[in-house]
Image 1 (cartoon, chains in turn purple, cyan):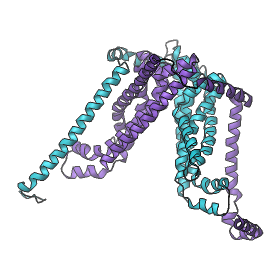
Image 2 (image 1 turned 90 degrees about the vertical axis):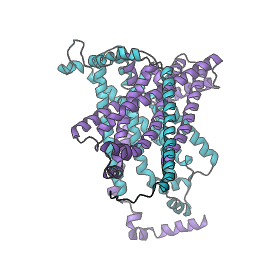
Image 3 (image 1 turned 45 degrees about the horizontal axis):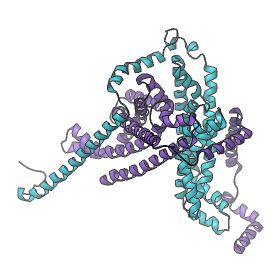
Image 4 (image 1 turned 120 degrees about the horizontal axis):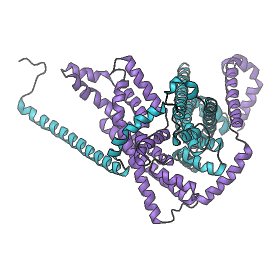
Length: 288
Length: 294
């Protein structure tokens, strides 16, 4: 402490001298500071104006927090009440996983051709791949819950609509991903196969696929993981799975059931995280 | 025949060839096993998800005709023949869309502040006390795993209808998601500047301010921008449960089959989301360029 105090005193005593000698480290120029300050002020200004427009006041917040604590108190301890309900919830959970799995696989199968079309080194026609990219982008910018509502209109309420919604939302993201994986693939193995006398099909099978497949497989696992999260909420609009139970229990204010359901979701997601991490390690490890 | 590559006699080749065939056979077995597993899982999940191919086949016409009707006005004319009639609610929808963007913005900023505050105590190299780290990390995990719309459902019960529960829900989810990313960034910093600042007797807070922040800021900003994109999408549907934004009008329009309204709002949403994605991508690239220059 004493040593650093001494250092500080020394610095203060010679500060003008030091500032003159090392301006680039000790003097911050206004030219750099002003735009940054203006930007920060604007960001904060928009924040508070936003709070005002959205009609969010501290009083509202405080009274709501009080009620929120009441609710949390009502939630504890998590209690499903009966074994029949536990079975019901576990069934819904299984349905959620089924929706996520089916949606992911469907999205992958249908997304792959779109990905091929959107890859710059597969389709030379700029118009085609520009169009494919834009439509993939617009599919991606529609949220999964909106897709669920649309599919409910087509196939009716239930988990099937949920799986189709996940498929639609995945389509955009997966197509983009496949096209990027293909574009990033090394050309040399493909050229090598061609040089050894292989046909174009051979070059795709033995030069391209071994590079692209592990990337796609490990990404598929990520998608499945994130889709499980989406599938838990898709029931809120009536598309099956555990979200249906969750929103119903919240609507009838059965808070102990709600907390049990949230706990169930947390455990499932954590378990899936762990498993997919293992699997991903196996997929990448086997190739490496 | 002349060969480019010398080929050893058959007797010498027999061993490697059978090895190769065995390896290929093993790989094929793995592949077949994997295929069977995936097929079984597919069948099980198809049953679980109540897939009815027949219904799907019979109703797939609904899908195309649904989009067909989306582009039809009440009068039966195509929407683009009468844009004024199509976008009759433009003022209201524009306001709601603006509200949606504000919800995303306010929630993202709040979440950034929360994540920033949480990142330092959650990092291995800045926080020595194990229990603090553990507590902060577990709470971040909780915030991240519970979907924002579930938070919104609960908050609507506590705070009432309006934008406040939506902002809070997205903010909490953002804190969880960004907190993890920020922690990873902070754990990967160069510790030399931190030691340098610490050696002058600076407090923990000054160390974070002068040694850590300059190293991580550009990374954090680009993650925050990415999160803003995600949150704009999230904010469009948070209104489904009554938590403000354009979602509240959209769900009414979809449920009550106001076809042309649905398409009008969807187009507005898609255009906005795409514009924001593009803007933020450009900003992030500029940020990266700024980073690599010095």
